[in-house]
Amino acid sequence: MNISFTEKLEHGWQVFNEGNVEEALKIVSEIEKLQNLTPIENLKYHVLKGVGFLWTGNFEKSLTIAKNIEKEGVKLGNPLLSIEAISLIKFCCSGSVRINLASASLIR
Image (cartoon, rainbow, N blue to C red; front, side, top):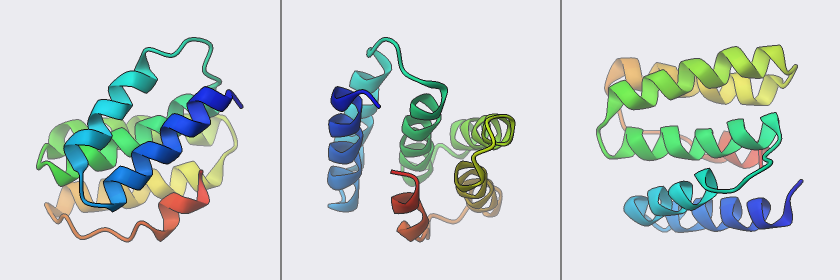
């Protein structure tokens, strides 16, 4: 895994867990600029992006991201990403912003 990617993703989750969603989404923008991400790295940062959109009330964007993560996670044989995506879809569809981030830590 790209060390720069790992550091940025960990930092993104850290600031998100501290309640700074906007800063986490800025970090997502930085990650998007990185080149040569593996397919799994790409999906992992999209989980943070989808959760960030969920917490900012942008349910439609979050749902779109979650559906893509679930589909690609299945293709890549990564059940943890698929489970995370299904959880995100559930919250997007319910309009709820209560989320248990314990499962997010499993995919980092």
